Length: 238
Image 1 (tube, rainbow, N blue to C red):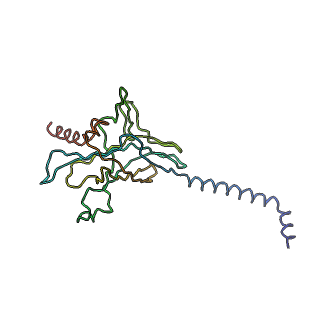
Image 2 (cartoon, one colour):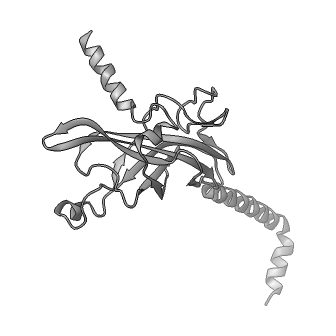
Image 3 (cartoon, rainbow, N blue to C red):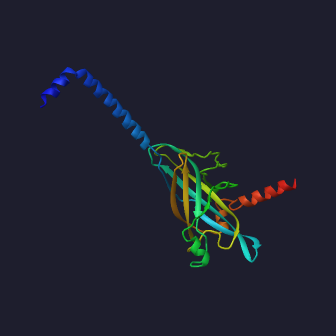
């Protein structure tokens, strides 16, 4: 039964070689395209020792019978690219749960909801900590660090990582509209966006500290919104 096939192969060896050659090329091209489609970044994140905390502080104002407060949150974050393609960090959003009474009417509507701060805010001064006569400076992740004249490094090749502080402020609010306090800790959800539009999410538990303790790391902690409001008011009077 194999004789006709053997005779055909012997008579058309050149043609069959061409077919095998083209098939090999197509297989190589196809596998290369498939591999390139599989290449993608994969960002992982974790907090490291440093200015990672939340502080809620009164403003001295009242809204009806409620005290008005503001909140500042800083995270000293490490972002690593463990994927197979480079990408840039485009933005980092932060979510938190409101500090509302369990089983209250509003609690049921908020139980599965995270309140999101969509973008970090600019810190007016660097994060630093004095250790004896020395000073430890913590670089920012998404803004320049003035003390050490360092620009942010947001482009990560495969296997690269970067450390930096990201800083958030909530504008004036009242009631339970601030991160939930449980034994002086709170949970925050961090969402990193890369230049391909992918999102990477992780939840961290961070300490809640007094505003004076926060200012030991950053003298302007909690002051950005107030400075912006003063600046806008000044511009309106000119």
